[in-house]
Length: 420
Image (tube, rainbow, N blue to C red; front, side):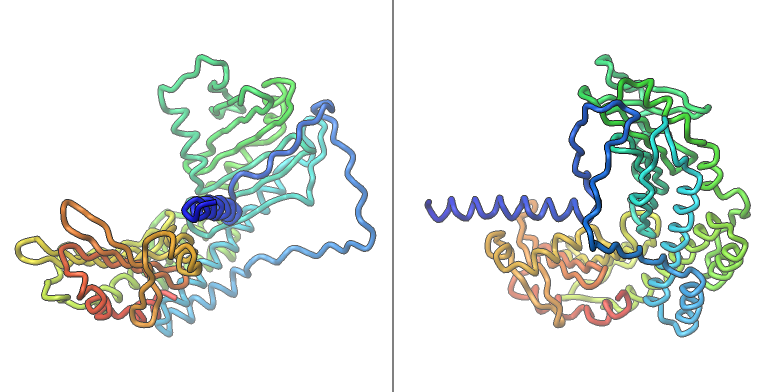
């Protein structure tokens, strides 16, 4: 086989492996179970357990009170990165408690099918577009999922509120327990019903090998949707956002002691936002006012806290020449979705060689260096990951010979010391 063909084949295999790993980490589609000819409400007999196979216990959830105390101590010591970590862990703990409460509200039997309690799933990212996810399986063919602060809810709400309609019999709007939802059919043997609950939550029930949509609707009515809405709604707090970190943490502690978990969650999000804003101000103050003879455009400085989205702290500073022909842009994104891609690139010399990009060292940190053409001028970009942060530098109209020198004038190590 020619050498070029070998490299192409290897590249395709690496791409397939990376996509498979990404699905595993990000919670991609689960492996579909094989269809069965058994009746809908009959559960297949479980395989006998292997003798001598000891099953361990699940890990205990984060202790919210401990993390709140640690966050307060870190704030008092002006250790913002540690405070941020403790708040995020406290938020995960609260979300897991909410999730376990929802599991308790789920029926153990649906359409005469017993639930597989050992397979119950509750996971929380603390932040991010995934949010809180609760899942329970019934037999081999039925599963129920609740997502809170999840993109799943937004997608179903969009379907309900759009003028989209299907003439192929695979999609229609329905009402279940006074809640509007969308039922879909894959054209084969899987039915799925999604019902938005409140502003950012979704209930999804899916049936494989159903006899028809009636089976799915009957199963959905075994769930008390009003109970889920109560558990996912904050109806007790006053809804006033605390901009002061200490005040927000104090409110979180008080609400948690009262077991008002949704209010606690809101307070922790406010705490995280306030911490991120402080981190943003500190990092902007560390950046040089001038870089390569270009002045920083103060009006373009940005620092944004995005505790509920897919990224955390976002900082931006732009340097420009007076004639606008040269520009340098420095960005920092915490909890960046690019971390996996850049980290994987830097850890694989083979990928580095095949991609045409380069590795570079700035202030002792490895980064990905790439060259692009934009509007007739060359653009050089450096991405440097560390822990959960991604620092990016973009040079436009700047001579390549001085890019590395200018990049080393940015206090990369000091910045990462704050965000680690």
